[in-house]
Length: 340
Ligand SMILES: C[S@@+](CC[C@H](N)C(=O)[O-])C[C@H]1O[C@@H](n2cnc3c(N)ncnc32)[C@H](O)[C@@H]1O
Image 1 (tube, rainbow, N blue to C red):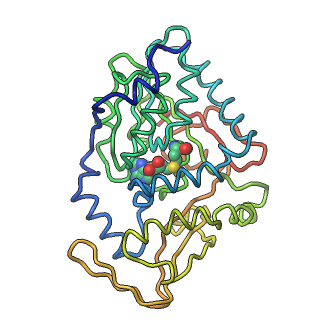
Image 2 (spheres, rainbow, N blue to C red):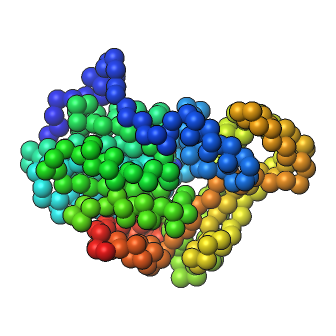
Image 3 (tube, helix red, strand yellow):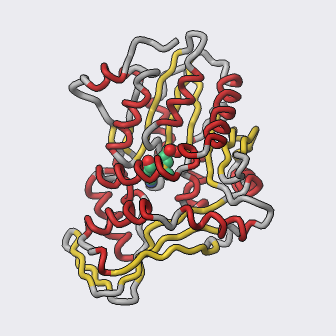
């Protein structure tokens, strides 16, 4: 069923070409880091974009992500992928993995698309070099290196991403864009217009989002809070702080739930580091001082419900055509098209 490429072949390749968008050029990354430290609101990308950060997140994902630990969740993704593959009748298909991570979900999808002699190509896109290379390797059993176009890009910063992906897509190919586990980590007002701008009229979008279970939305968000308040999450977040020069003994992590500051009605889980001791950090040529009682927000994760996903997307001209919700109601996969 699969072509002759193999992970082994991929591993012995001496060179892999990775395109780097300006949003991930060192001066822009440094500017974003300084902005994060000044506002004490850390841009999520810094939690992933080092080799250490990637490794810690993958360990956390393996241990706690429902996609890895809940067979019903894996089955829900499988159902969504089977249905999407059935609907995708084009002979040439280009899959764009936005925030591809390790590429496991994209690979599962590509395996199902890889039938009836279809020609597949793939653009894994992420802020982390370790992630895009990992995704190329994971997908290499299905998609050959010659049609795999890895891209380092900050999707929140890149306002020209539509043109970038246009150039990467082989002519005549139908495009299928994946956006798994990404929606919760962005302000909706920022990422949804970006996503809408990226989608061409006949593209399909498969979006996976963490959900709040049950009928009572606020109670549902509160219920999933313990999923974040655990050792592997603290280790992952601490790796970023240690790199900056913060010590574990400087403070403590606190997890909580808050309403979306932009009044969308959404709620989100947040993780903050509260300083007990004074700490000075040097980044580029700037000094940052944190005193006992100061806090830095490291992470947030919006929790949606299927209705809230549909409503917000619709507001940006994206329509949900079908959806698959896990029995736990904690995760959903949404097949969408642009209508506006
Ligand atoms: C929660 S993980 C999801 C990974 C994968 N899609 C999955 O479902 O397993 C988020 C991914 O988004 C990437 N990421 C975070 N911020 C990003 C940004 N601003 N632009 C592009 N990728 C980003 C991270 O490096 C990470 O791989």
